[in-house]
Length: 129
Image (cartoon, rainbow, N blue to C red):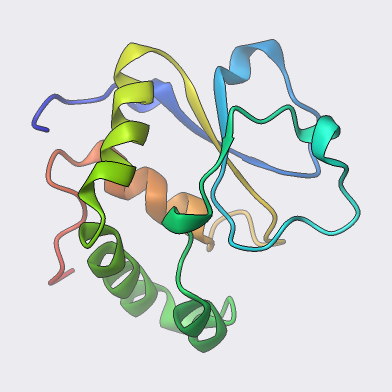
């Protein structure tokens, strides 16, 4: 899909923040359910477990900022293996606001930030980045 998505259409939000009307489609992109959060409290459109980093990648990364660039590259490579799944997210975002919901503590170094970057680039993050 080569259509550019406006950056304002792809937002990220921690699962522990309350949902808001302006969130649009809310997609949880973590493999594990956020601790202590009831399903109805998240008000999700979808739980896209398949788009979360693999267990192996998540455990290797362990939210270490020193591994961020390599994590992004490896995560993008995993995402490219399932184009139909992330194309559905791009479709959501091309029609309106999409909020990627995540549970990590670090708001700058997490899979939602990497996914947002991936979605906003027409071809996804370059594997060489």
